[in-house]
Image (cartoon, rainbow, N blue to C red; front, side):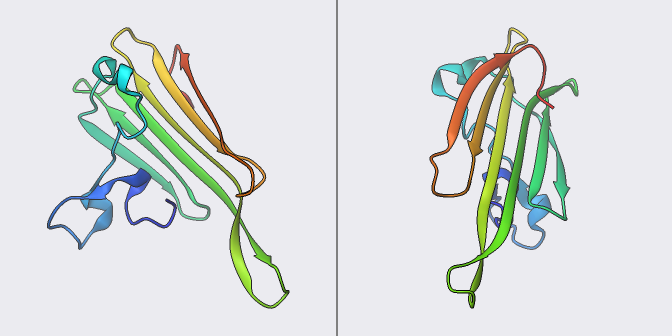
Amino acid sequence: MTHSPCIFGAVPREGSSRNTVKCCQPQWQAWLPEPWQALAIVPQSFRVYREYEVPARRVIGDDQTGKPCFCASDYRLIEPRSDDDEEIYPALTYGESLQAWRLLDGRWLVRRWRQPFGEDVDPVISLGFDTRMPR
């Protein structure tokens, strides 16, 4: 996911391959559970913030009035590792992602994904509600 030319698993629009930052659209419903899809407010525009020194990104989706109704963030901690002291490869030591959707009743449905202690441990996924957009 962090090496994708598109932010947060978004796919390039058809026929656009020149500027991948402008041609990608976030798939804001990708992790939204089906029972909640009809209750989530649909974003009309997106603001993308990207950290260039570490693999970290944030997307804010705004409704038609300009108020946030979707947010997603992604962070990966990568360390160089070696099994034989000769060949070095990048290894995930920690990762977390968050997706949140504002529902019609004003609550935020928040999905958190954490990959602690590297790739060998199962990720921890939680789904819950909050009264405000996660920071």
